[in-house]
Length: 145
Ligand SMILES: [Zn+2]
Image (cartoon, rainbow, N blue to C red; front, side, top):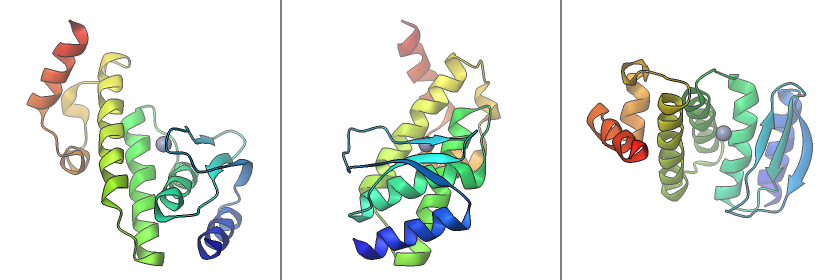
C-alpha cells in the first residue's frame, strides 16, 4: 500500500536508517536489522502484516540492542505495534501471536545459551508473552531431554 510505503520511508529518514534491501513480503522470510551500519532488510509494506514486519526491524534500531535477545525483540515488537496502532489504528492478532511465540523462543535461547536466570525476565515481558516461570521450566526440561 502506497500509504504504508510512504510512512515507512518517512520513518527511515527520521531515524537515519538505510535500506540494505527491500524484500518481497513472504511470511517464511527472515528480515533483519544491522546495528553497526544502521541498515534494515525489510519487506515492501503491502498489508498490515508486512507493515508490522518492517516496523519491527526499524524498531530494533530505534530501541537499541540488548545482550538478551528476548529483551531486544520485545522492545522492537512493542515499538512496531504501538507505531502501527497510533498511525493507522492497526491491531493484528495474528502478528502479535507470532511475536509472542518468537519472544518465547528467544527466552528459551537466552536461558539455554546465555545462561540467563528465569527471574531475570522482566515482568511486563512475561505478561505480554502470557507465560509463567513454571511453563518456561517445563519447556526447558523438554529441550534438555
Ligand atoms: Zn527482531
